[in-house]
Figure 1 (tube, rainbow, N blue to C red):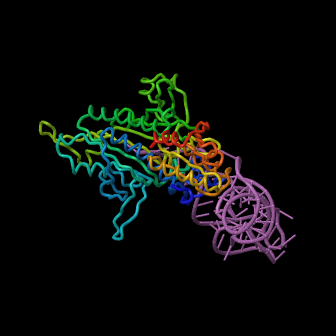
Figure 2 (cartoon, rainbow, N blue to C red; figure 1 turned 90 degrees about the horizontal axis):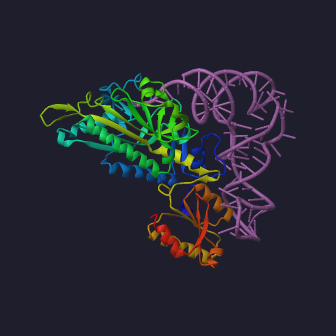
Length: 417
RNA sequence: CGGGGCGUAGUGUAACGGCUAACAUGCUUGAUUUGGGAUCAAGUGACUCCGGGUUCGAAUCCCGGCGCCCCGACCA
């Protein structure tokens, strides 16, 4: 993409109503636009990062046998009444509205109920199971207090997968497989080393649920971390006897963290009230064993922005960066322009995503903006580089600069196509 | 929902109850520049969040509303 066509602007200063680092950086760099408290629009660069993160998640979910669907945001009240989760006293974060005829509807804050109903329509026999189905969709939660930029909003993108198993054993195998996929996701997007598999309160069908918590000072949760074992325990259950029995808490140290994913066993909590059953090998009707697995895609983007940045801007990992290469043309010289243009064409032809800064601005401004945007590789074409028949390649993360011939550069960048 | 703070050009800040609401940045035009948000000049841009009130006079004080941020509570 040519930067002259990118309509977003960068700003030197963040709006004063943003305190959180993720929102400050993402707004300054032109990735997001604040619509209102806790509600952010995605600008072109933001869309690209969000899609990339979603695709990382999608690939892993497909890899463990997940099948993608897309349920509705508008919710039928009657489905939620079956599990008693329609009442405001039960769920206080519903956004509710009415149809013209007076029928009440809600905007989905999660999808266990409609998902279970949808699956019940499809499942009859043990031969139909297990099923892993997921969606990547916008959720709506009427939070009393939105905070921390895009980390806790009222409207946000989330991946939610639901597993439907015949037996507890089968469920547990799936659960473990998804936990591994989750860790790979966090590794891939660049926060794996700071993300801990965290024991949290389980609910009625299991001793624990598990959260994936990423360490950060701006986190709203406190977890107790065991560095060597790479596990943690959420503060909320730290005083429970079962926890004290299972873990030697002396080895755990408290840290601030943000929950980027969670997985939990639902047992038959939803399948029973919503009549999701199957006929087993003996001809008996059995309730389906369920699990639920969430990842906040938008929150993940926020945490990456926050953790992988420095004092001049964002630093995207190559896996989710909006573009792999930021090609910067310096000066208005015709020879420079045509060289940059041909390099741009060649990189794009090799399948590399490129943001090509074809504008006539001062070098300083272009560099400062490039640093702020955080694209992994910056390639400069200028009179200087042209004179030596090379390009300049800078790694945004390490800051290392090298000179490389055009063909070698294309070959190198092609690795990231 | 309890507590605290704040609303002034696009953005960031200033302005004792008193002059035409200032400065920086952005944007426009021109010139000089072209390897770190460059320099100079001339422009542009504000019903001071909204509605009431006090006062000779309100960005400034008072009341109400709306919005935003922070702390807490809440958070399958």
